[in-house]
Image 1 (cartoon, helix red, strand yellow):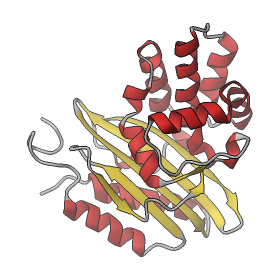
Image 2 (tube, rainbow, N blue to C red):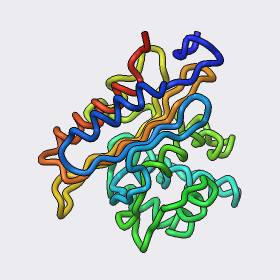
Image 3 (cartoon, rainbow, N blue to C red):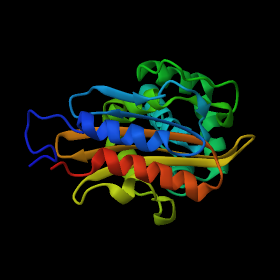
Image 4 (cartoon, one colour):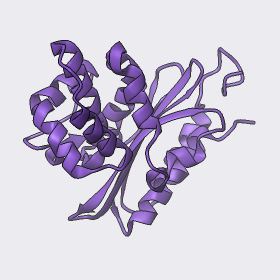
Length: 239
């Protein structure tokens, strides 16, 4: 049985989205979120506000890289495979820089266009990328379709296997039996602590995507708690 309880019901419900918005409004700092529900509809809270992408953009680097391999029929080198694993599973920045050298800002822009992103910006290196919750929720909602078939399972498995120390937030509240593909990001900014997370939750053919972006947090743990609280309200079982 799908988590909606019915093939015709939509999840999360309007009440769940409202509860998440109310929680977000009560948190310190800047908070935006977007969720693509099981019917493919986008629900938002300040979801077109741009943020520094931080390591969330590494999921885009992964997809853009394997797409380039498929399009150009290039071989998958062992070194690049190791760098992709480190970039996603432990969020290694040096590996992201190496992969970006092959993808380039043009590759990320091409992917953003394919994914229907409206507000993605990158000026030079990957740390200059700017994202919105709306764009990232749409991206993760369609990420399996955006991945070339040859590399779909490989890339999906990487996004499922982030190390436990970085598996806070949405994975903590994902229901038993669900598959969770996700990537987080965190760093200092001039406003305080930035903490992001984007995820795709799957139960068979039932899929939702959640993007939660935060900045100006007083400390990283506070940002992680904000993400967990919003996600919990979006995925909690309905009565």
